Image 1 (cartoon, rainbow, N blue to C red):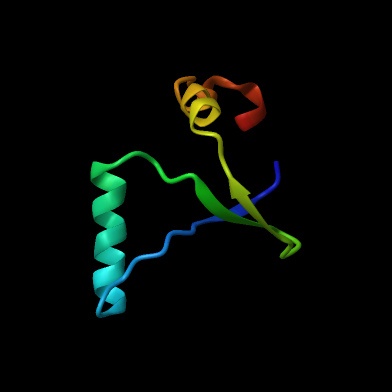
Image 2: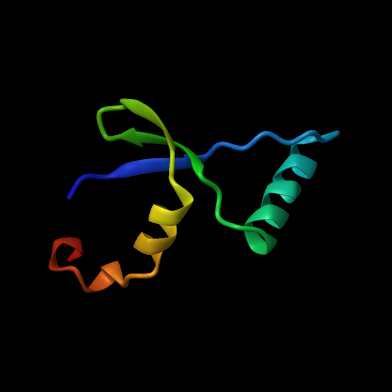
Length: 71
């Protein structure tokens, strides 16, 4: 299985980096999951993605840990 680094990309107005991180934390714990991501593979190729909320919610509702491809 390949490895990827996934970064949530969201812009916040804040006075400090820590405040921006705290605003992100607040959004992650109280709001819907983010849809904008930057994904980098093991060859360092980066791709920007915007997920469709309906498709992402459908995917998230399934337990993918039971997939033998994830073992």
